Length: 306
Image (cartoon, rainbow, N blue to C red; front, side, top):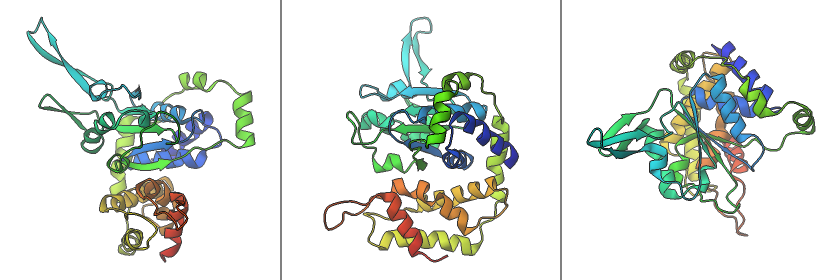
């Protein structure tokens, strides 16, 4: 199964040039059954990455452009009175899909953002007293602009915690940027993209993660990282038990992509920053300047012996 996942990674890599690590991290997140947050400046390929992943995995795809006037009903759906049936009929919103691209999610108000919480956690939507299951698998891939940009609302901690991983694409290097400038339009390439994996094969790969062994010593290491985050004075709050579970699940997925049936400490370290950095708020220094969470997570990793 790892062979097909690598084929997906290569195919997406033909679209998103020079970002092999980020593509692998995104695949790790989806394989672990989690939701993905991509934070970066506009124009570096966040939306294209989401679309390419959905097509390559053979999943149905919907996109919502989040704006300040978007309402929860615009996402989840609404009941409308129809004269023919003499009653209200529920019209599903775009969230009823397998991959939902929440584009520029932090341009929506907190009320609309909170409308995603049930769907992301429970894979269901409740409206008018009726609970409706979402398609399986169900992934949210959200893009987020830097919070200093005009018209953005910071995501609350409860929303951030629903994302298994958060990553940043960054600017391409010179060789990758030249390939983009000299190559074909990425939107044209997306239209010609074919599925390299079926949803059934993805579900099988996800179920296979249960067979990836995590030893007692490896679980001790994950617990030690979580405990250190709560007492080392670097963060306002430490990692929650849900974050520790997410870290172990992501490490299992990373090991599976490596073709192994057991988790190594190196797998935990490979996913530590994308799983934990967005969940941790740094304490401000004596000069009132907060260090980047990524750097602090690396400090956390260095402080805990394997």
